[in-house]
Length: 281
Image 1 (cartoon, rainbow, N blue to C red):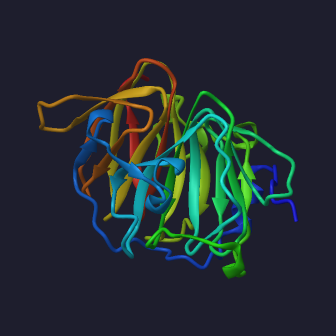
Image 2: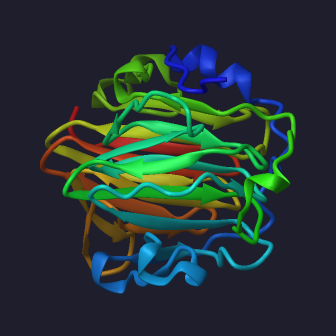
């Protein structure tokens, strides 16, 4: 069955709120930054060598049974053989055009800013169709393995592809944890908004944004999807410029000053609440 389902994200969220993956992340995050120069690159599937996409570590270890976030780069024209994964992953397109579906499905290219979910055990292919293609992948458990379709199984989750034009953005005055006049917007992606449950959102900062993010969760991780920010931990003199594909983690109750010259989208994965405050009112 073709799995490319385009629908409002508010409806899409209900599809996988009962996903059979962990609802919390036991690993406490710390204040850390991974700039483009610090990403550790290797092969996503070492057995295939340079026929495999490249993989860049942001946090965690995808080869172990732990949550991890990593980048994947695909060459133009890349198309994988049909395969499955032993674990569920969720992805956001950062650059280029990506297709992720069963092998008989018509190509539906997801542009930068789109989101998809690939359940464990579901047979599929992944393809890329631009000169440069990159995505961010988020896993709740590992190791991340590539396995033959002969081992396919149904884990109860369902695949979904959401083109960026189908994301539902909430304005700041609709969100209690964002200062009302900041013009910050949010799109909810996955997880539960029950107390202390793991969830992921996209945060869209308007051009000229200047403010801060306070983490109120034991676990907070942020990946720049588009645009760029200047990032500075409060009481730290160091300022980092974080472009698309870079990451910062936040310890509980830490405050991070953020500014963006142009519109910027950040993927935030947190085990609870955080607050966004704007200095530009």
